[in-house]
Image 1: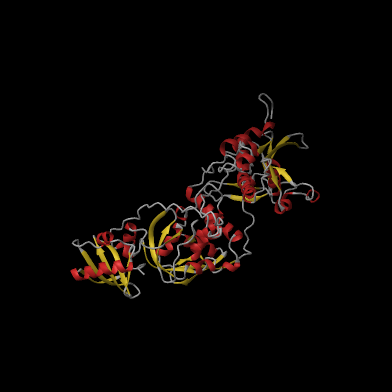
Image 2 (image 1 turned 135 degrees about the vertical axis):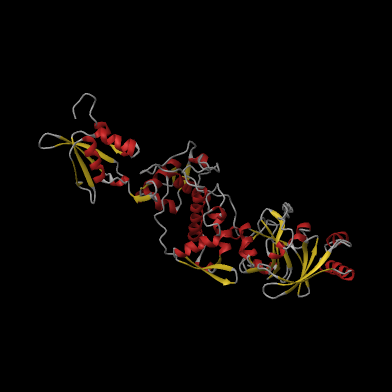
Amino acid sequence: MFAKAFRVKSNTAIKGSDRRKLRADVTAVFPTLGTDQVSQLIPGKEELNIVKLYAHRGDAVTVYVSGGNPILFELEKNLYPTVYTLWSYPDLLPAFTTWPPVLEKLVGGADLMLPGLVVPPAGLPQVQKGDLCAIALVGNRAPVAIGVAAMSTAEMLTSGLKGRGFSVLHTYQDHLWRSGDKSSPPSIAPLAPDPPDPGEEKGSVQADATLRGDLRHLTLEGEEEEVGEVQHRCAEKSPSEATEDPSVGGLTAEPTDGKTLQEQMDELLERCFVHALKCRVKKADLPLLTSTLLGSHMFSCCPEGRQLDVKKSSYKKLSKFLQHMQQEQVIQVKELSQGVESIVAVDWKHPRKGSILDGGEVRTIVISYAKKHDLVDADNNNLVKLDPILCDCILEKNEQHTVMKLPWDSLLSRCLEKLQPAYQVTFPGQEPVVKKGKICPVDITLAQRASNKKVTVVRNLEAYGLDPYSVAALLQQRCQASTTVTPAPGAKDSLQVQIQGNQVHHLGRLLLEECQLPRKHIQGLEKAPKPGKKK
């Protein structure tokens, strides 16, 4: 209601008779407030103003302001507390809990949908359709919004927590809140849950984990690979120890790939988005609120160790990220109601294969999968039971009925062997180039020609961004020797450079010192002439 600016019609000091009537109304509407609390809320002598205004949709609203803050507002003869009042009296209304990312949508004018609710162990508060309710965020009991229940608690549970739950009237950070001192919600610890009835079955009032969204701190783990090689690094801990260690095999949450935090968050955001669409969202869930996608699906799709925070990405807002995904033709987003965006279509056949994984990420995925599906052998933590998916992925046909378990090392090495190798080369000032297969080293050989003269032959320069013609011209000048560039035998679209004489020493200096190629990616440097010998 106050998502947009309102127009003030009048602002006057309250009369004594109106003050007494307001006290009586508050006592009647909120019977849980004692006499002293009502007197504190509506003091007898302190300044109290009545502000009459029109909301952006034309609704006539009366607001009661005390100490510079709006404390109550009246709409169609119904009295409602503001968040400023609820921070002093957090138990004034039955309170429901949602995830922090949902608040942004509520401030923008959206209603609270049931999939965004967090169901506490004690169950949802009991309310009837039309009851006034408070909305708080996970971890803090201070309300951030008030709304009217669109259905009873029983109907919410019967619906499977789907559909519209609350018509939101007022939120923290909306224009009514901005008319006050703009203070932030206090930190109010959640109430300790009541001990369960011994006769009750545990979990009988808990919603499914997918509805609760199971917010975990998540991370992408792994290390940056050197140019041209995907190294499958293993941490010092054994995989069996890693299953008990949240850092997964000793890999820390600290990134070591040189990427900025923003770039890491972009990758994490996209990974969680794709994982959510592939593993959690079904066609029957569409249209799906974008806030539900984030709160109930994406948060729970990240690997363990780091927190997904859209604000730390280059997109800053979920809507901008989803707009990018729409431009990539992965999803289609529409505003089905004012200010509320939903995903209405997903291209389930959109190509998502071919993602680059380093050894650390493969290791993390396999370990997480084994833990999630309870595949670690109970008698021997060094063994992993093979379920049908793992059997199909890593076993040969003649093994599928005989091999039931594998050691961690064997399982991980087999998974890596099944993946197609790839490499990434980064040139200064350019985007990284990723190619499938294994990168071939720069190959330096010596050949004997018919004239009994030696020539130096170098191949595979193009893979490292080196132009064979430029290398030939440079070496011709430095070595004072003739050079030629010819097609490389047995290699499609590849050239080789021939230099008269043994010029391995000059080549080594060019490639190692000037081009700064890692020595392990150059083959044949040992063929340089020994001191005192002729080239």
